[in-house]
Image (cartoon, rainbow over all chains, first blue to last red; front, top):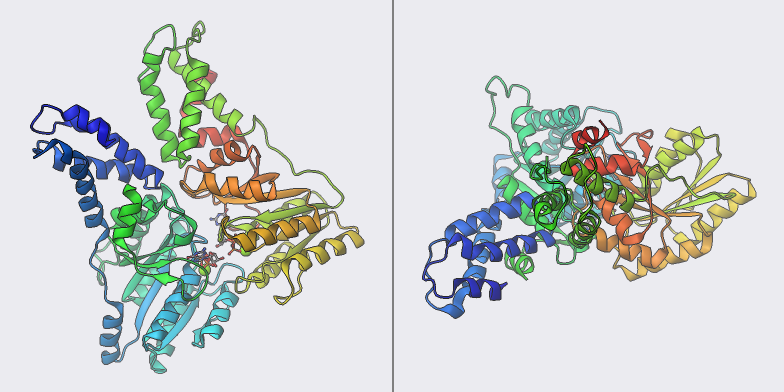
Length: 311
Length: 294
Ligand SMILES: Nc1nc2c(ncn2[C@@H]2O[C@H](COP(=O)(O)OP(=O)(O)OP(=O)(O)O)[C@@H](O)[C@H]2O)c(=O)[nH]1
Ligand SMILES: Nc1nc2c(ncn2[C@@H]2O[C@H](COP(=O)(O)OP(=O)(O)OP(=O)(O)O)[C@@H](O)[C@H]2O)c(=O)[nH]1
Ligand SMILES: [Mg+2]
Ligand SMILES: [Mg+2]
């Protein structure tokens, strides 16, 4: 594609939209091949195009570098979001004598419960006293799944079996954690489709009742164009469906604070979902799940994601 | 939707199809059809449409839409739904990536077959995922179908073998074998799946695919099909918003039909797969077809 671009700018001093079109079209295809959602790929390319138009090239041989660097900058800029320092915030909550509450949410089967357990392990490694809360009271086996993790990790679990109101179970779990002097409560929730209104309302209710310090959206790297819709609708539901939201609402406007990107080991170089999710939500990727054991948890390596996207 | 730009020309030409083809391409990409599959599909449509005389009283637009949707339906295995393969007993082996909905689909399929007055046994071979056996046992009791399990200390191949043997001994009509989620590039687990297959000679080996899957769909379908020779697929989570373009990749890459779709978490949320409905969903063009039918 460098070749195409080079040809079209011979003899001109500033880059015009027409000069850039074929190269940008190529870039868009490349992003989509790496599983960036169509809409997001289009927006990113547009904004890079905008920044390049009218710019002068110092030398003919620099064109390829020039465009690539513009994309590198743009993509890194999107992916490098300010991170919540979880360990630091937990320490501060501890000083106040209150457990730090984290709610995990997302669509079905993406890896909420498994990555919750991995994060419990990671927190334990950093000296935090963790408690789990089994607030998926719907899916068959969900409570037993969490029980198994709690046992293996040697951390307490609060559960009330099935068919209970998850918002209330979470509230009780937090009370117990406070009584027992736990630092962190990790709240598992049932998977739900973003357009299932009753279930989205129930999630909003759980969150507004319990005011967690951190709401993590769990999304899998395998997802395609639906990633955008998921994040937009989870965010919107948390803000709009909470009881009292319409009346202005008493508490702070809840949104997704961070993303857990799972199944990163399943996608080879098709890393585009990371970009779609961050772009659609403005939230940072805080953890990356890359396997099924407790140690398969990483931080996002922005440079390597950008390289895969542009390769 | 996508097909505005054709005017009232008498013929579909390379020139006047350019715009509409680009629109179809975008629709397919937004629906998560894998890029190479899109490329081949566009080429096929172009070849079929080129120079085709537009019928009396039909606009080129309508003619073009008809070709696209016909070609999509063809690609997904022609009109009508496909049933499970026959056998006595029928042995259905479920396979797929982690979290796609295999265990849930076992329960739904069991309920579906019970309604057809078949006796069913489910076999729990996922010895890896925490509480996977509990999950299947719970679903079994919900749909009132027995579950054969040997805990987590016995090998999945052995559990599958014993489960199917038991079903045969008891004259049960259908055995559904649940398996652990696995990555197509995990050599050990793929070998295990091959061994399970060799041990139970399934009448159906179904790949369970999540409708939300993005660009990885084509390569995962290919690898599963190469390694365990699928007989078909189940497309799950169709109650969501995703357009489900993975369906197109399944058939195009493996040549195997999708037999069922999952449309929810409840045990009755399973339906036969109709390519013609899927074609409409993928193109987001409900109105277009009714336009044609007039
Ligand atoms: N390969 C891989 N598998 C994962 C990863 N994270 C989770 N899984 C697997 O994905 C499957 C589903 O994980 P769960 O944690 O049960 O997912 P969930 O989102 O809690 O599912 P529901 O509660 O049913 O909505 C399990 O088989 C997990 O082992 C990951 O990072 N990589
Ligand atoms: N909305 C919706 N959810 C579904 C559907 N099918 C399955 N699920 C949900 O998806 C999640 C994962 O389903 P499972 O049946 O546990 O998936 P699995 O493939 O057996 O997972 P592993 O054994 O971990 O690989 C659960 O929360 C199911 O309730 C569906 O058609 N629609
Ligand atoms: Mg879960
Ligand atoms: Mg399972």
